Amino acid sequence: MTTVLTAQALGKRYGRRWALRECTIDIPAGHVVGLVGPNGAGKTTLLKLASGQLEPTAGDIAVLGGRPGGTPAQLARVGFVAQDTPAYAGLTVAEHLRLGARLNPRWDDGMARERVARLGLDPAQRAGKLSGGQRAQLALTLGLAKRPELLILDEPVASLDPLARREFLQGLMEATAEHELSVVLSSHLVSDLERICDYLIVLVDSRVQVAGETDRLLAAHHRLTGPRRDPDRLPAGQHVVSARHTDRQSTYVVRTDAPIHDPAWTVTRLSLEDLVLAYMDKPAAADRRAPLEVQR
Amino acid sequence: MEEPVIEFHLDAKTGVSPYLQLVRQVRHALRLGLLDEGDQLPTVKEVVAQLAINPNTVLKAYRELEHEGLITARPGVGTFVTATLTGASLAAHGPLRLELQRWLAKARRAGLDEESIEALFMTTFRTTAQEDIA
Picture 1 (cartoon, chains in turn yellow, brown):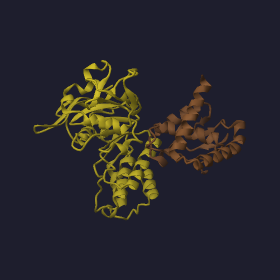
Picture 2 (picture 1 turned 135 degrees about the vertical axis):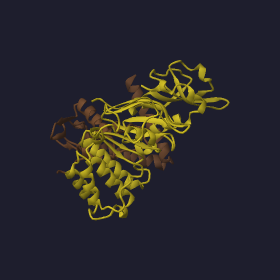
Picture 3 (picture 1 turned 90 degrees about the vertical axis):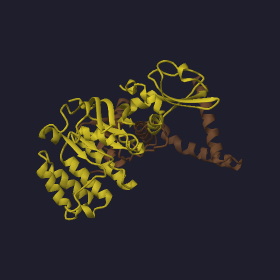
Picture 4 (picture 1 turned 45 degrees about the horizontal axis):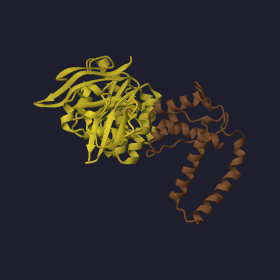
């Protein structure tokens, strides 16, 4: 198995509004995939389509080679931690583990107990009494003890304080190193994902703007600063991601696989955050130019 | 479990990729003699759990160091240092540091602030390096 998620012209419409459209991606297995974009961009929709909680309106999606949520076997292979890491407030930590064991055929009870003990969670404590960070760790424990091949997390750290956020991501990365686990997680903050993702999908206005391995994305994007120049006077191989002009100066973010030799430009590298912001900054008019051409 | 010899840290603001930061920290520790032949590096899982970073980042760093012949991974046992970068030069560090400290004190007395000192050092360092190449 080499592909964890493939989508072909995938779309989801609510009434007249497309929450996700023309989504074509192919994510290889063994990555920690960051799905970033502003609130309302369609991140949750894509994750729910991948976990089988939503049916597509258009196109196709396959997860680990199967139809999301299609069979009990398929359900067992994919873990899903919903937004704000919910738990049953009235149930204790121990009851959550028992429930997990009853509902999941591949449940790893030893791992669940070991994690709960290491986190210092009291098994008799009701989930409603846990702190936000503890509840998130409980939800992560349930997701990991299910022993999925793919774990999907929707904005898992958005509501956590910095320390709880760090501890959550430490636990997630440790599990990724230990078990052969692919992870897809969303966030509206790139800074949360910068260290942990080696694959990135940028989703803006219901469309995938760019997707690929972070190393390659960083190597292929450049910021060019120099005397004012119109975009049609840039070489054909340079795809303009964003452009800003003053009377005298132009600043472009371009994507190209070729080196940039033009001496008029000052060329600088982008951080992952700058790269994502450049795609978000894109004027609405440019969106209609096939966004897929920048994908690999 | 033995206490690891070195601990990694990451600086988000340098613009240097995390994997390269790890590589440099190992080389740095080797140069300063903090790491020696036979020392064990932290396992991938330990680094990942400590820094909350992607496991592939650590693997990539260790692969590069292995390629440079500085470390060897023994499957199931751990990753070990197999070379040093200090050689005979370590003995020279002390006197050189002393001279540098004297020079810094002189620069401060002459009224240079930290930024000016750094700029002066870096430009001199670069020009000399270029002259050496030419």
